Image (cartoon, rainbow, N blue to C red; front, top):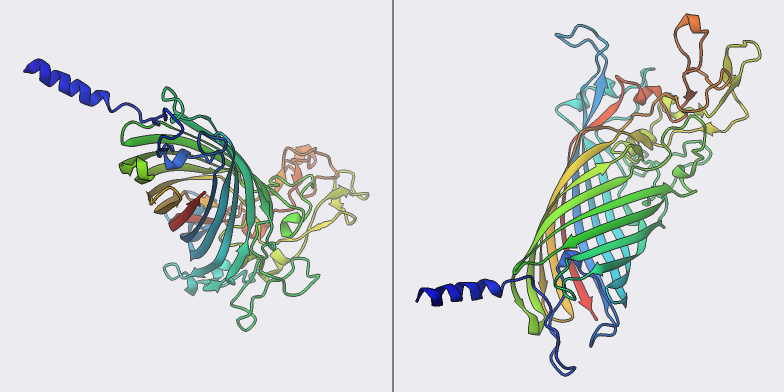
Length: 477
């Protein structure tokens, strides 16, 4: 009796090994659902009994972003020994952004576990505004420049934007596929290019001009401009994911990386190869995810299953120039300290052998609202459910919550200490030690603005949360 029970238990566990496809013995046997988990599925071609695969999908995502904007102060703080302390204690505004996106895409099988992928997110509406933060609207002096001019006011509203920011084209490949070889996990790698195609973003104030968007040209060369929608970038996105199915669960982990480079157009197209510039590109974004897919039910003969997915991830944004939460408010300002041009270079002063003066022959650098942002991290939790209704149709829906660390969004350094130093190019970047005759400490950064980048005047973003909801439908041919 005991031997019979032991044999039954061992037989039960013996049939729960890693899931695999049932290889048909003959061509006329019915084909079964043998796809990997949703996180590592790659459309393929020239497979047994299935020479070509083509998937097309459409989905809708609603995203809400909220944050608190504060400003450093250099005022004497109670209990501190010196007034040189800077702290982000001044409430400025509560930031809110609502974005509605239609996601369109297609995957075309090229060979076994090799697919060409196309993505085109269409922004239906992107609205942003600044509201009161614990009485901040009653203290407009917090938003003045050193000359007492108002940079912007709260409440503030940006125009509602719409259009296509970029399109993406790339390849996904699975070097290993557990459904083909049960001794190996499923491993997917991908590489894609992103191409900015929409009109370039321009800083605007929708609360001015009788309700019409006011988008000034930083150089003052033209009048009102189009608000735009595109970040105006070339991007390279790489990702990898590895998973292994055990019975009804399939754990996975992955890594992704996005690097963007400004196109030669819009305000980002302004030459950034000046000697003093320290940041010349957008932040590099890297993320790592771990997750678990659960398959509580599947009917392989009918190509039907339900998959639940939950994942957590960490996100890192490097330092870089960015369209921050204050892009519209600062970029559309009328304050002279931001509207006036910065020199891009200095030259030796012929009247003073140890001095330098502005090089009037060099281009001028105007402020467009794009600022130097410091590095920060964040984490994200997401969950989704996918229902594959049959061989040719599946639906998915999900939600995600992301939290970002506090970070400085106006932090351009005044001098580039790594640039080639000389007396003539030093400008104001000089040592205060009188014994060194004003020796150079670097080259002036033309993107630095004392009004917003000097410690004690910098803006920070705190308590950033991003909530997303989405639903997708996929046709599989």
